[in-house]
Amino acid sequence: MAVAAALVVAPVSSTDLPSGFAAITSKIPNPWSAFRNLTGCHFGEQQQGVAKVKDYLSHFGYLPQSSSGFTDLFDADLEEAIKVYQRNFGLNISGVMDAPTVAQMMAPRCGVADVINGTSTMGGASSHVHGRNLYTYFPGSPTWPRSRKSLRYFITQTAATTIDRATLSLVFERAFARWSAATTLNFTEAASAKDADITIGFYAGDHGDGEAFDGPLGTLAHAFSPTDGRFHLDAAEAWVATGDVSRASSDVAVDLESVAVHEIGHLLGLGHSSEPGAIMYPTITSRTRKVDLASDDVVGIQSLYGGNPNFKGVAPPATSSRDMDSGAGASSRPWSALVAVVAVAAGLVVAL
Ligand SMILES: [Zn+2]
Ligand SMILES: [Zn+2]
Image (cartoon, rainbow, N blue to C red):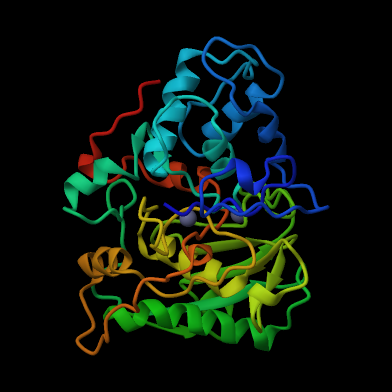
């Protein structure tokens, strides 16, 4: 699979990685770049930085929180958590911090968790439930009421971004249109927050929901499951709202519309997918545009809200590996607090 590994900051060179990985050096620190120092680390080892991997895996639901703080010992729980992570991302299930796993962990991503309440929302589990599809729902499959075909959104917080409001309106309008094209839902921009079902804002660092943003790369955005309606973006990202993101001058440029399409999937009730071509795949590569729903996304959303008879079908799969990864950086907590179980019959319980 093509993995979102383009944001490797240094010594992992592209020659160390399977084809499809591209190492881009950057002077801007990736909050997870120190993971590269753990390449090859495995069960039984004690190494500085292992606790940070545990923090990371805990944040995305693969390990329970630790009230006393994590240690740097690579223990059996960590090995098991890494195996579940590797399964979810289609990596070789080694339980070792091998180079592809490190690269995947360093990729910018959505902050929403992959595993909620010990049940994987991704991977083989849900493929059981949905046949060949890999899409997932939040625990309990929350949706907007079936009677609500029109949802209103409002852009609330823009002080932390330099992108002008008119441009933002156009970007979010296009992102919502991707989902309305496939379903019976439609979306309109409200005149004020109090008239809106969905609120969208840019925030820096800690912004009061327990899911602080982490600066450039790392987590990019997060959104809450229905019917919460909150969608937060990390104001510190090098967002590209117009033009060709692949030609952006910054190595860490992130396409705003691509992340918006992903987060709207969450707002409507979709969880993460293990399908690398799906919009709902958790990671995205910098300087990459990925806005077309894949059939995995379409089947998932139509199962919740019904199909649009005028839907033209999905675009052909991207041929470039750079188009395969998407990520949005949300955090898991917003959801775990709101939802209780994941894709019901997931059956893939993390052994913690
Ligand atoms: Zn996500
Ligand atoms: Zn937030």
